[in-house]
Length: 168
Image (cartoon, rainbow, N blue to C red; front, side):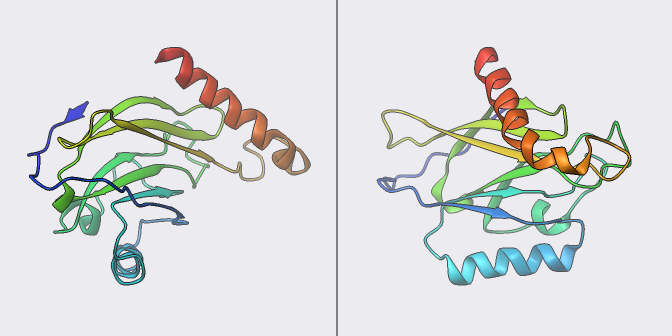
């Protein structure tokens, strides 16, 4: 699952990371607008962690797949339960920075999308691990009682993080 990239000659001494709840990237226009806004408002961002992409492995988002700025590593929502319409996370890295990205572990159970990626660069002595967790709110009839959703969020996220940690 390692995606090597040609290493650049420029040092990366500061890493600028942005986390963004996308609230869905199924619409190409919305994806374009989000990426355009990031390019305009957050010009120095090297890495973007997008949560709630709402993408499945059956969906190709052309703006993510074919762009000149970002390399994209997706962890799509699992579609075992088709009534769940949210979830998924994606890690975007600026192509010009020539990062090497490796998916270390992922977790997609109990309405959770979680992943750990390792970023490396030829100018770094030690790689940096980036972790993303998104809790997929169950729609009525698919999961816990709505009154329990908030109480169980932290517990479920901790379950995901612990499962990933045990595998690493």
